[in-house]
Length: 89
Image (tube, rainbow, N blue to C red; front, side):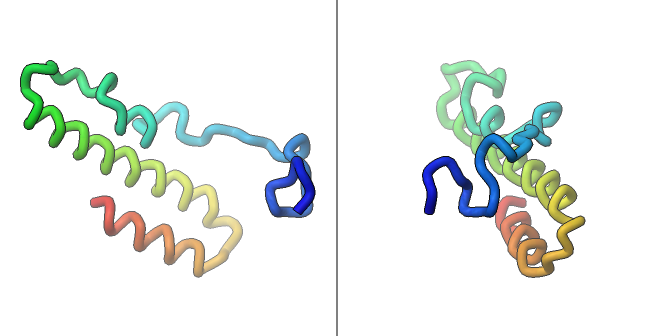
């Protein structure tokens, strides 16, 4: 594989890397403790809140990716995303 490619027939410069989750709860924001608004004193409950928000962020990101990838009409990819979404509910 050539350096500077993504494993496809294009270079990094040719790929439009738009963040389709930027205006939503997403995995990175949801899985960090900074965004939960939970006080540090309640460690046990704060972990469960972070965990729940993290799973919710994963689910929402997968849903966004699924909608974006639906136009490719690859049933294997869509079925895989569906299975991941079931696990993150």
